[in-house]
Image 1 (tube, helix red, strand yellow):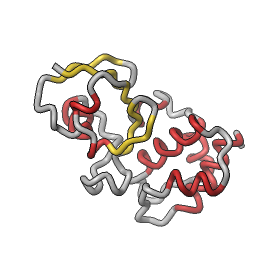
Image 2 (cartoon, helix red, strand yellow):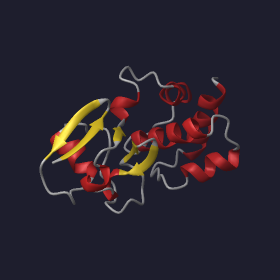
Image 3 (cartoon, helix red, strand yellow):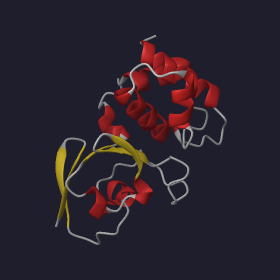
Image 4 (tube, helix red, strand yellow):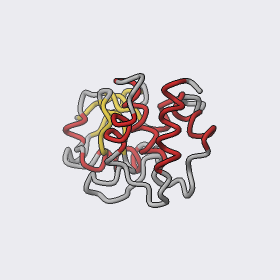
Amino acid sequence: MITLRVNGQVQAYDGDPSLPLLWYLRDELGLTGSKFGCGEGLCGACTVHLAGNAVRSCAVSMADAAGHEVVTIEGLDPRGDHPVQRAWRAVNVPQCGFCQAGQIMQAAALLAKTPNPTEQQITEAMDGNICRCGCYQRIQTAVRAAATGV
């Protein structure tokens, strides 16, 4: 039996320990904010926080998640008022929106560890998150806004 805490709630899983965390979150718990993009951990659409670190949930097994705290976009702030979420709305970041949960989770992890990042730190942290619409300038602006509280 695998236990973990998802968005503050203890969860138990008694299935295949190699199941990707993404599928457990989406199919078992109904938390569909994290998206399946590439299945290889390369695009960032499935980004969640695991023990406070941004990870690609498609590349993390349930066995690797066992005993840890997982935070999804749904648990970042239940009302959608995390500073990064507010900045995303203020800057009007999304175009299609598919990658945005992963982008927000990546940015939130960066700001939790580096509250006042440089442009270079933002670029490096967000580098593994692909936006097929090309909203990178708005993403950078929103991360800066969230960091400065603007």
